[in-house]
Length: 483
Ligand code: UD1
Ligand code: CA
Image 1 (spheres, rainbow, N blue to C red):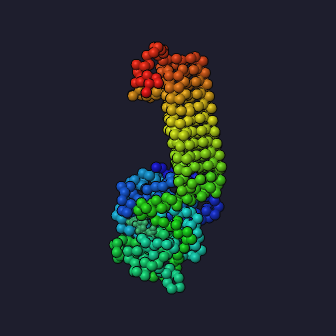
Image 2 (image 1 turned 30 degrees about the vertical axis):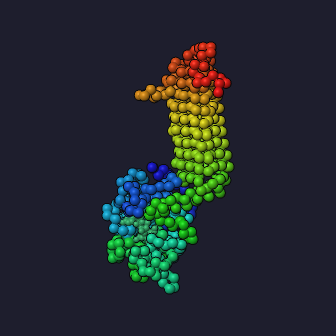
Image 3 (image 1 turned 135 degrees about the horizontal axis):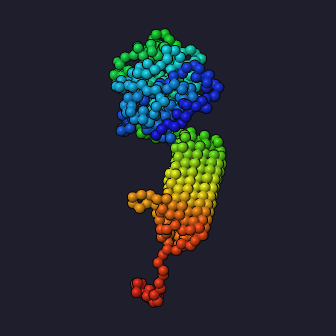
């Protein structure tokens, strides 16, 4: 699972506009915490590597932060090797050997942080935060010249979150974790989203002032706020309007909630760009997918990976397309397509399976119960029913009749088949590879073809028919008309 998108944007400047470059000049380094075990997930996989809609939780966070911070330090620990394997090189890692809390995690990143400038801290399990919110947080932080600014939200159910404690006049005093909160503090509806902008020097100073004197015996990053307030620094809380983006994923239920919200966000974006989605609640499009205007996505469609869909296509219902490129005006119904290219005007399904390295030329028709693997099919060719085509190069305007099968495998090796332009393969034929069927050749129905067929030739390879008069009754239980 390579974060292709992240690498691409890290290497290229294409995703930065003028104002973002302005922010970058402010020297923002992001620290993303991803060292926790995620006990509540009850999983063998580190929590931050759970994924939805094309990215892991951690990649969602990194992608949101990237436009405001190209310098990203990821703190890893539990399952750190797996996290590194998933993100690859090109990311700065800081190891937290023992998970002694979020404050302790940030301490491990200190050697990678600048002496001055802004440090943006994010938790790897808050995947819905968007770039716009982070920009507003940074703008608020910079405008007031604060030592620290916490991103907060007012939630209907604050259970599990740290509460934001304000003075009577409304200024930020500190953050109290649920497990350490008094009953009155638990009533507070404003929560810590786990996202902060710090002045680098103030962060170092605050981390030096926190301890482990709390219910969990951990170094809480949240305590940095109270430490700074006591020292007389100016700190601020930036309240975000849409609390749903602050959802922290601690268990599988929250993972599903976050996935549903991300699905709605992606689908709304597509609809705004002119894509029809009949049932957004059953349509899943990865963040890495692009869909052209006037395309219709019917219920239960899943588009994933590096898939691009052109304009005026109809996809679904009940269709799964991954890592594939579809041109304009393509129709795919009730089918599974992976690693394939479908040029303009192709129609697929219902119930077809296109496996990797399949390439269908313009206006190719692939019908029901057809499987194609690692094959090229030329413009206008038809494979309408019940076929298997593997390791083949099929020319233009070829017709494969119902049940025509490419026999590409002898149990040990795979062999290739070439069927040239305009050839006609009759129903229920076996084309035993390696095989070359010439241009305009005709294979009679029911043939098992083991030798090349020259251009224009008729290949006929089946037992001759014998009719035995009146013998049918021997095989019939009853005479015709008998009761
Ligand atoms: C934390 C906050 C809480 C906030 C909530 C928002 C603290 C003490 N609490 O609680 O105020 O409302 O997030 O979602 O910060 N991690 C490490 N190393 C550690 C511990 C955690 O890297 O030693 C990482 C985890 O991988 C995770 C993130 O920090 O990505 C948050 O940790 P988690 O245990 O989920 O904190 P919460 O209990 O959710
Ligand atoms: Ca959490």
